[in-house]
Amino acid sequence: MSTSETEPSDSGAAPAQPSSQLSLLLELQEADLALDRLAYRRRELPERVAVSELGARLVELTARVAEAQDQRDKLASQQLTLDQRSDAVGGRIATIEQRLRSGRAGSYRDEQAMGEEVTSLAHLRREIEDQELEVMEALEPLDQELAALTASCSAAAEELGLAREQLGMATAAIDEEAALVRATRGRLAARVAPELATPYERLRAKLGGIGAAHLVGGACSGCHLQLPAGELHRLRHATPDSVVYCDQCGRILVMTSDQAGR
Ligand SMILES: [Zn+2]
Image (tube, rainbow, N blue to C red; front, side, top):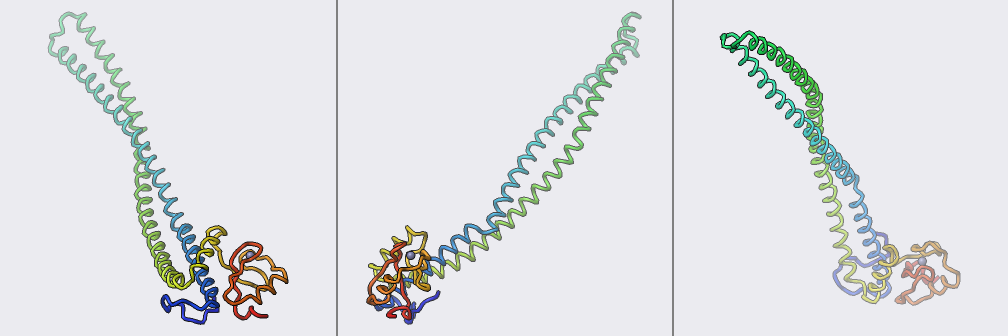
């Protein structure tokens, strides 16, 4: 924290001298900006982006696994139906053949009709078997795809777990740093007079996080605009305890002791 503060900043709640009040305010501003930067870093952590991307990838992979599994279930159900039909036809053929062999077929015409039925059923069974083969051929690449997708899914879940762990560590480190800055800020805030702290907080909320600025080469560090010569003269000869505001942006202007009285 850059400052011209000469008193120790952690000397408890002892009220500071008017001249050092403005320096304290600049320290408070520095602490607030440090907290803002930490909050920004916490929001924009690359680990957070990684978690978000991996999470989206896992959702996509899970959906693709479900889709492939659904297709596979449909094919397996078709396979089961075909199996049952094939068994039924096979059973019917066996029954007829048994009757033919046992000589209980009856007339020659009946025997001929049964023979024709066996031929026709055998033809039907071949058709069913061909369909079964088609289903099995469709199942094979689907099973491979499903295995690959499931493996990708587990890998993505593992990566996501690691990324979450890293995000946790990164946020914990920032939180630890922020806690220290917040403690410093608390000690500073306790020493800044309310008549200075109140406008500072209001300006900070209104003007993008900066409520107090200092002079840099005759310019306001808040708005970076050069102050008119008359205004500079007025500032340099103001009493140490007077609070002056930048004419251009309205922020509290703090002069360091070497800038004052010249
Ligand atoms: Zn300004």
